[in-house]
Length: 238
Ligand SMILES: [Zn+2]
Image 1 (cartoon, rainbow, N blue to C red):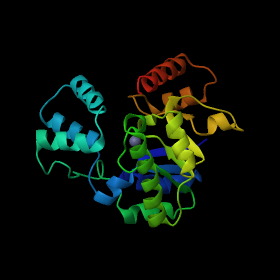
Image 2 (tube, rainbow, N blue to C red):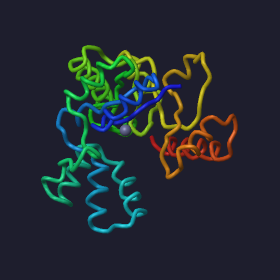
Image 3 (cartoon, rainbow, N blue to C red):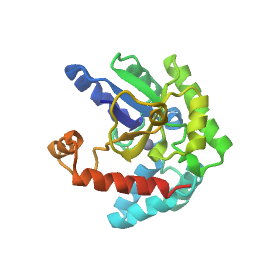
Image 4 (cartoon, helix red, strand yellow):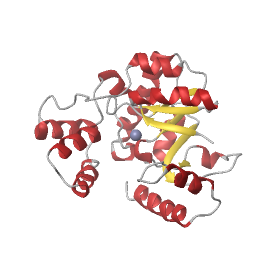
């Protein structure tokens, strides 16, 4: 099993004592631009500001989906114009990216592996290929600088990828790629599987025992339903 945490939130540090207690390794995928700037992720800013204004959850979800057609810089400019210039300020450890020092502390843990999650959490197939390449390579370089070694594994932001993105990631030295397509694989992996690993996301208002049951089950209707939905979501992107 490969346990993963995405984005690089400061509260990922809380996983370390639990990993040690159970001797379980985990991989932390870090968007290095947010670590460098200390700015919260745009979807947390949107959620905070819309919640304050009493916007319905369904409307928020629709707005978040619409914004995903823009790149990170455009989204941030849009949210600043809507909610104010100082809106990209973290409110607590719940929406704060880890600092460089915190990243280094996690990276120094023998059970922790650091992974690439691009610089700006861009949806890679949606931006021009040279920009996608830069997002992957600069993230590798920043993590190399901060931790002393470049990652071998990437989680494509939102799990979205295509064959060109896989080639760019491979060229940058990455040997494993993680998607958001729901599912599991058996070892050993073959070459066609290495750069598109499926995952199970523990989100969606389920209880922990329920999540565990679905993950362990060799067959589950809800597993199949979500596998189809996640594939459809991914193939809706270019
Ligand atoms: Zn992410």
